[in-house]
Length: 279
Image (cartoon, rainbow, N blue to C red):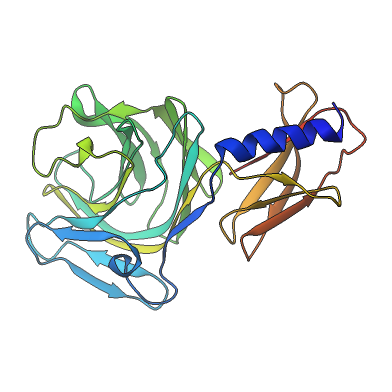
């Protein structure tokens, strides 16, 4: 298939795609609640402040404290089409009294309330199982305390892949946590994301720099022979080429500070397809 074939693929991707969303950016100095998030604390002794480059949440002041940020996402999260959640953070301090609890957790649930909850210690990350409920599942070592890391939680079909600084460190099946019957029962909420300390068995000091949601990009074929799309500023997208629509190889990478991305088609003489992926 020639350029028209690439144009057709771009049109199909546009039908299933949606614009990327910056969900939180600490650089203006405002917190998550000023940018569309809800905040709750169990005891009320959690502290929040701006460090000059990140928004900091501290839950170590009182035993049993739990606090964090949550929001519902729109349009709905479709795991079949796929989506990525990007988080840049640092974990200076984390304490826990149980091996299956963590001071910092990230929970993402799609439109069907299927998703994953990840727990972070300063030196590792692990997934929460759904059978038995909220027990330690797959895990991987990584230092989260020394410097900010870029985390990408990629959800596709029935699995997730966790990238840290663009390297896969953890993968596993999506879970169904709706069997939980405690309070608050956030696991019944579709299109849901939570960041923070959600347990009285651990505590944390975490620095949040940014959060973004990346859906399949709306790719267009420009008259000048370029692929164009809108995405998250300061992110790198990969253009891939396939001769048969099954085996894909990288054809280039594109980064933009504005969120508008343009890529020349390096293989314009080849028969085949092009697509844009992240990460």
